[in-house]
View 1 (spheres, rainbow, N blue to C red):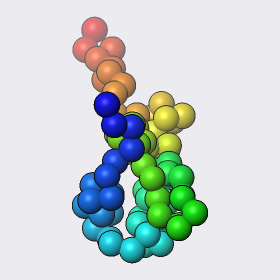
View 2 (spheres, helix red, strand yellow):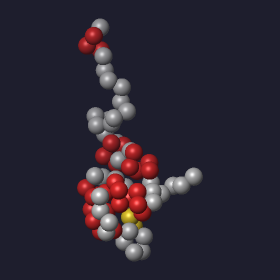
View 3 (cartoon, rainbow, N blue to C red):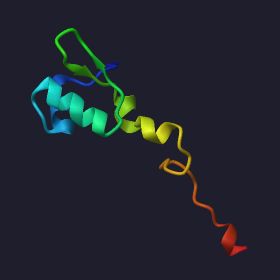
Length: 72
């Protein structure tokens, strides 16, 4: 089982080929990544599926059940 996305997958989700541009797109979208010594980002699938800004903000989380209390 792979942990990190491939170079092609990162290029596809960021729509950038250069490492610096990929890092900027990932940072702008609050997706956690690590850089290798060449400055290329390494991203896990978990980081893409669960961006940092949604992890700790219950109001923005997509997996929260809607409230139907008003229907009672």
